[in-house]
Length: 429
Image (cartoon, rainbow, N blue to C red; front, side, top):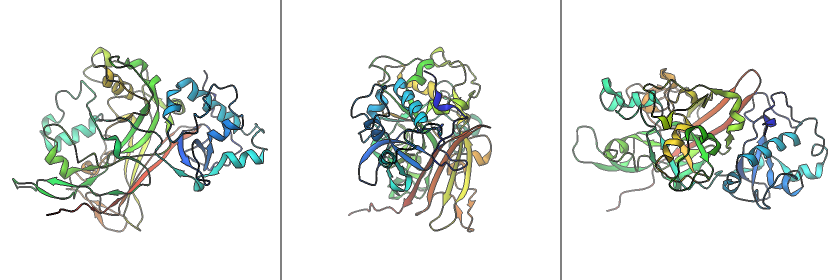
């Protein structure tokens, strides 16, 4: 099926601001609550939320095979399970409905009132029910920086890193949408020079600039997904902030990796951007040396040119852009991550979330965490008001943005933005 929704010459009869993340060529998917307190699945064009269930009920999806309640859900999971053919058909039809030359809905005021909402009138929700969450570690630059800081600067990468997409199983119960405040976690840390741990609030809270991809029902238990078929099982992508407590992490991560340092919060952007929408921005991934084992070898351009930004904003102060990176820097691709994840027969389900790992580039301003940007606190960042940051302070807000752009169109992700609140868990005697 042709992806007609991607036609760069298409214009919408809805008003869309210049450089909007959501032109008619985007058509992402999300879940929102309307001004009438109805939860529904929808899409977005410009600054308008579009109720897909209302479109279906009013007959605009006639000819597309859909279950009666596919959009009357509080998650995208069932829609994701319907498969790529359905996702593509809905995107194509939405593009047709809102095309400037299509008068059907454009001139039907009654239908428009039921279907279209201003973004200020809706409340975005977590887009999927996440059964499982896996976080990878796929940026060579990030892994090298961390290895230099905490291991051997001359042998920063562990022996396995260039051979497998390293990952670990995260906690899906604390994945939250943009806009939800996060409390500073507490736990055990080992002060420098001490031999006995102490308990209290983490003092080294960090962000990790990541993206995430969301899967469909991909395989049966015991079966694997071939690397060159992996994209058929990826619904779309979101921005992801893998919040981290570096002092807790340092004490706990040997021998089994991060635990409390990571499981207190992971936040994602509310709109899922389909791989179809990103198709015009395909690029080659970094050359891999040594060549991976055959099950990880892939053909063609398997990554995307996605510009990524991180802003840090103290309470009631001006935000500062502190990081500019790009998704294409990742050494391991989404296809390789999913192929490796399932090579042992691990079952992947609709709505599973896979984090990319921190996305860092070669330049210092492209480092995707404060750990790297400040080199573990040695090089503080000077904020717009003259204050400094080595790690995130209470009431700071971290905002991540992402977008693709060429000479014809811009496709964006919106943002994931969350404020850090003080710790509330206290020691009891």
